[in-house]
Length: 69
Image 1 (tube, rainbow, N blue to C red):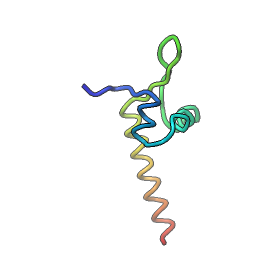
Image 2: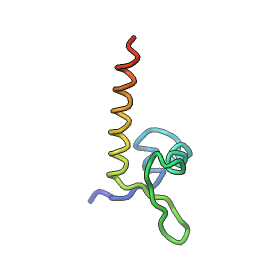
Image 3: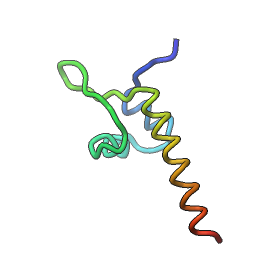
């Protein structure tokens, strides 16, 4: 069974970035997440991560189209 919710460390590993960068994405609202549990640990839903990645592909395609070599 695939996990529905990912830790910030899991997301960082998948995106090959630092956990602090993921935390910043979450805190700025760029990457939707929830706080869960008594300690308020962050979790990112797998679909939210996939949507975020798709959005980045779209933004990158727009950038490349507007900035040809």
